[in-house]
Amino acid sequence: MPARLIPYSLARRSEPEIRARAASLHAEMSARRSCRFFSDEPVPRDLIESLIAIAHSAPSGANRKPWRFVAVDDPKIRHEIRVAAEAEERESYDHRMPKEWLEALEPLGTNAEKPFLEIAPWLVVMFRIDWEEIAGQRVSNYYPAESTGIAAGFFIMACHQVGLATLTHTPSPMRFLREILGRPVNEKPFLLIPVGYPAADCVVPDIPKKPLQDALQWNR
Image (cartoon, rainbow, N blue to C red; front, side, top):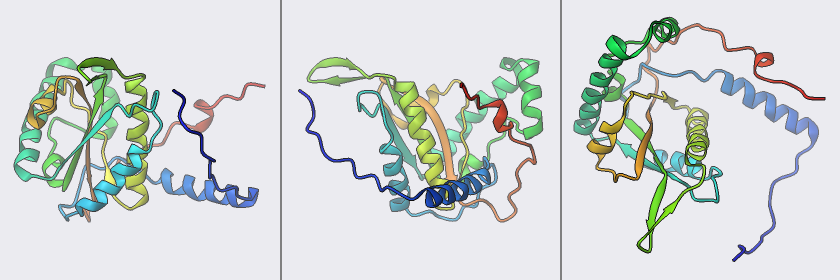
């Protein structure tokens, strides 16, 4: 049965205001960087909840919202996640990653050590839900990977807008996250995102972004 229709209340702005807001947002988001040096300063739980609520507003296939956010601040669980993640990372750096991949990572200065998983006050783990059990029946979700990726982008952008740093961490494989956090088999780990304030002495690699003209094509 079709849903009830309601008016779409999107504010109409003048073109000069649109341009000014777009320029301001571009300047702010261009300063965003992946953070690997976090402060252990606490971040209130209700703020994390608000940021996840923003992410939860993201569009999704058939409005199924095929994601789960698990927010972790327990030091023991964060330590357990770090130990498991570093074990997978050591295996990847030593045996799984081809030479080309290691060369691509070299400018970033990354390695198997992930202390930020314990230092950042929050770890937000995103799970992708491919199917759910509803009324005793297995029901598929639509475009779960694409939808969860969009929600992740909303979350990362929201964190940056309020002054919190993030890192999109993807130790592979990530099955250990489902085991440590006690998630059901239909939830697949998608992203591990440390969240917090950057450390006072935080530094990031001075590397250029891919030029926009390499990512944009006009078809006329």
